[in-house]
Image (cartoon, rainbow, N blue to C red; front, top):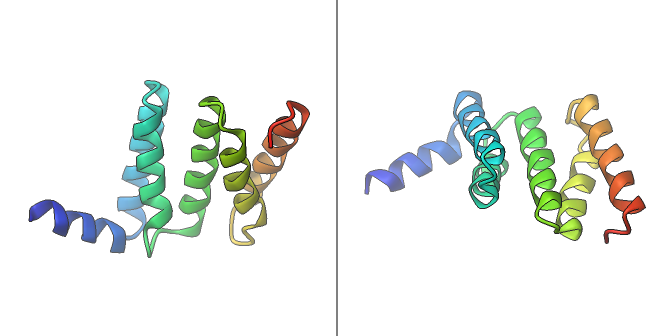
Length: 109
């Protein structure tokens, strides 16, 4: 029951909670725990009140993990969402556009 309430609190939570999940995702990605990283990033993306910058970063990072897992179509989907996010920081949007170009050069659809 406690995990239900902590999960609900996380979904409704704001920046500091989202930052913690984003950091956990990055830590898991560094350890090559791609499944765990995707889970953490998805949690941030699904948070109702997460700051848009953090949601954009989680989408971008999740795309990198999908690309590393040889899933270019799923990576492309996330990168296209980031590139189209008007509220995303320009640096994140530009990085997403560059990564899309790399996927295109490699023939990933």
